[in-house]
Length: 136
Image 1 (cartoon, rainbow, N blue to C red):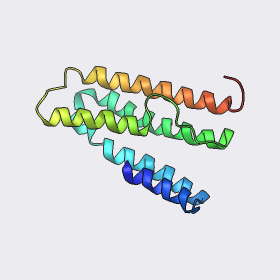
Image 2: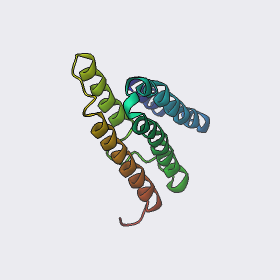
Image 3: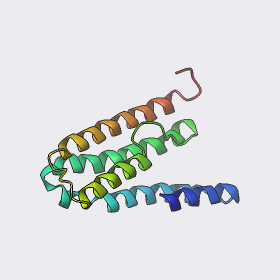
Image 4: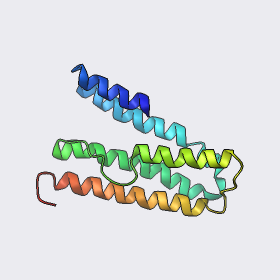
């Protein structure tokens, strides 16, 4: 996450932003999310549908943020479950599981909540992109 943010800051600071770089950054974000979160399918096999939905909704959420750029000219980061939020929640989930707490009884609620927040984020991003420049 830090390197991802640093990359964007450096490109803006040194005026080295390009359309290709922006597209590659977005694609790289989605690919990294899938690669990082894909092992959840193995470790949360009893919640496989919720984990697959989490992966898909994460991709859709990032796509809706990028579509804001296409529709309104600004990349949308709105909503309660962006890329950093997903990384934080799943990171905490992993740490708590690693230190020995069994979260399998709660994982259905955790992933269902994350998925609902992803839907809300996606809806918020699309709504704000479509209403950009208007009173919301």
